[in-house]
Image (cartoon, rainbow, N blue to C red; front, side, top):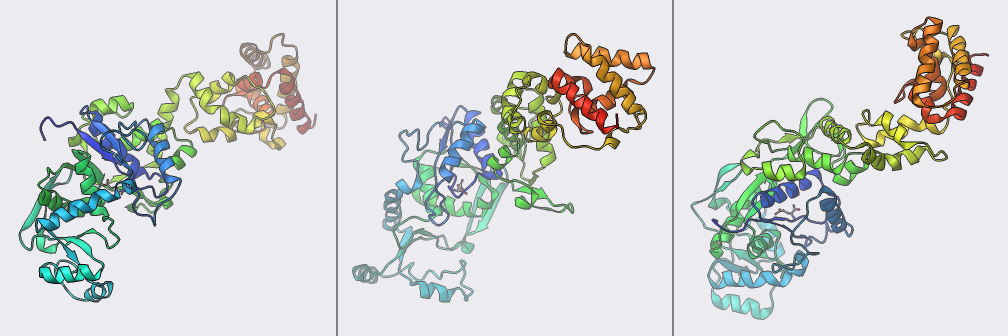
Length: 486
Ligand code: GLU
C-alpha cells in the first residue's frame, strides 16, 4: 500500500439517528485520513429500504458538520468516484458478479425459497446452503435461464483451507473456509447484497483503510475472499471495539437507551457541546501517547495513531462526558458563554432585560451543562413562593428573631445607597455586619433569601441584588420583611 494516498470512508446507513458508535467510526475515519494527509469520503449506504428513514441523511450531514468532521467527497461534494449514494450505484454491481461467473469463481443459483427453507433443518456444512447449483451442467443453466427461473449469484468459497487476515486492532484472525457459505452476491431482484456492494464500493472508490464496528469482524474473511477473487488489494482493516454502558447494578452491557442518550443529537439537546462530545468519543477506545485529555480536533489529528486504538470494549461514562463538557464551558470566553447561554436565559427570563454579562459572571464557573441554566436562574424573572423558615440557617446564625432585624437594616441601608453596583452593595452589607457585630453571613443569608426566594442560587446576595437592580431588590426585601411578620 506504499505511496498510495490514504482514503477512508464513512458509510452510514440512513436508518434514523446518529448513534455515538457511528460518530466514533466517523471520527476515527476522519482522523486516519487527516493524520495521513488523506481523503475522508462520505458514502450513504441506503440500499436497505426497509430500514430507510427519510430524515436520516439530513441528520448525517448535520452531525458531521456540527462535529467538525468535514468530508472531502460525498453526495454533496462529488468527485471522480461518484455516485456516493449506494442506491445510485445499483447497476454497477452485477457486471462484477458476472465477471466472477465467467472466471468460474461464482455461479447462478436457481434454488427456490422452499428448497432453501427445507435445508435449514439440515446440518449442511457451510451454514445452510448445500451448494446444489455450484456445479450445474451448462445445458441445465441455459435451460433454467431460458425458462426465466429467478436466480441469485453466489460466490464459490474455497472448500478447504483457511482464510487469515490481520486487523490493525484485533490482530490476526483465521477462519476455516469450510465454515463459509457460498455467499450471495446478487439477489433475485438483481441488486447486490450488502456484503458484495461494500467491497465493490470500497475498491472502486480507492479506499485504503476501512474503519468499522467489530460486529463486521466475522464478515471480513468473506470480503477478503472477494478481493482475492478479483485480484484486488485488500484494504487495511480497523475494527473498533464495542461501546458499553454501565447498568445501575454495576453490570456492563452494550450501550443502550436505558443507560442514557445514545444519539449525538440527543446529547446535544441535553446540553453537551459538540466539541466536548467529540473529544470524549475520541478517547472511547483510543489512547494518546501522553495523558492529555482535552484535545481540539486539530490536536487529535496530530496525535492520532492507529496503534493507540484498543480492542477492549470501552464504557460510555456520562459523568466523564459531563466533566469534559464542564471543561469546555470553563474554557469559553465570557462572551462566548453568554452567546451559548442566551437561549437558556431567555427560556425563563422572559420579561426582563437584565445585564446578561452579570448573569454570566455568576454562572460561568458553575455550569456543567447549559441545560442546567433555566432552573438555576428562574428566580430572576419572578420571586418564587417561599416560607419564612427559609430565613433560618444554622451556619449563618440566622433565626426568626434576628432575620427581620437584619433584613430591615439591610433594606434601610441599601435604600440610601447612591449608586447601585456590586462594590457599593458589598461594602454596605459588610459594613452593616461589622457595625452590628455579627458574622457577615448573618446579614448575607437573609438578604439573599429575600432576593432570591430559594436556598441554592448561583452567586451570593451581592451579585443577585446587583443583577436585580435597585427597584426590584427593594421590593423583594420588603416582601421578605412581610413574610417575617414586620
Ligand atoms: N452501512 C454500514 C453501517 O452503517 C457501514 C458498515 C461499514 O462501515 O462498512 O453499519
